[in-house]
Every structure is written in structure tokens, then in C-alpha cells.
Image 1 (cartoon, one colour):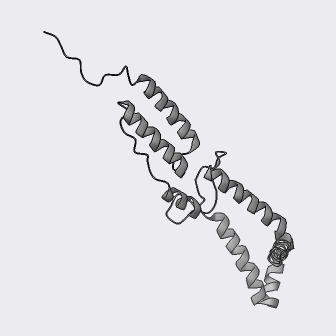
Image 2 (image 1 turned 120 degrees about the vertical axis):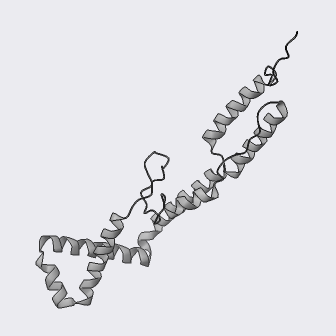
Length: 174
């Protein structure tokens, strides 16, 4: 429930930013930078000597274009996050050095406990404890809805089967 609320808030914030961004000074400057960079890139592709001429004529200002282009190429070559998104495709954000995931997904993984500690389901009391633990995991966000649904089904099976199961070996009559 909290995840759904947070996701809805995030979507609303993104929609608001998308709507307001073009009218902000930062949005206008980023748009101008992107247009100028694209135009420079196209010009350099069409006329390769332009790059050399810009170095001779403009010196430092040309270096900004080169630096931006080099940084963009480096970013495009960076290893990517492998965290599977909800649609099954990987995240593809730049991953942290020496890690499998990006900064955000590493933080999400660190916040998630590794496992639920459920008791052995050998009597009605232990099944009730497992139900309470599962509910708490769902509320805390440590157990996703898909797993909680499967777990609820298995707990229902355990509850219906608990009266018929004998864990002690039968005594032999002599």
C-alpha cells in the first residue's frame, strides 16, 4: 500500500516537473545547450576541418565542445545496471564501480532484508505466527504482493493439513 502511494506521488511529481520544466530558466538553458551541441556535432560530421579551425580560432571555447562530447561518449560506454525492471528489461542506468547495480538499486537492495524468518509449520500456533510475520512483511514493504499471495496460499494449505500430519514416528506394537 505504501509502495503504491509512493509510486503515485513519484508519478505526480514527474508529471509536474515535465509540465513546468520548459518554462524554467534551467529548462531553457538545457534546451539551448542541447540544440547548440547537436548543431556543433552535425557541423563537425559534415565538415571535419571545422574542428581544427575552431581549435585555432577559439581555443578555450572549442575545448568546452570537446569536453562535452568526450564526457558524453564516456557516459555512453559506462557499464550499466542489471537490475530487472517490472517489464523484465534491465535498468540500464550507469552502475556503481565494482557493483552489479546503480546507486538507487544498491540502496533499495540494502534496505531490503534478505529473508523472512518463518517458523516450522507443524501446528496451528506456528502457522498463526507465520501469518503474522507475513502480514508484517507486507506492511513493512519487505515482502512484495506476489510473494505474499503465494505465501498466503501455502499457509492456507498448511492450515488445512495441520490436523492430519504426524511428525512423530508411529510406535510399533510387539
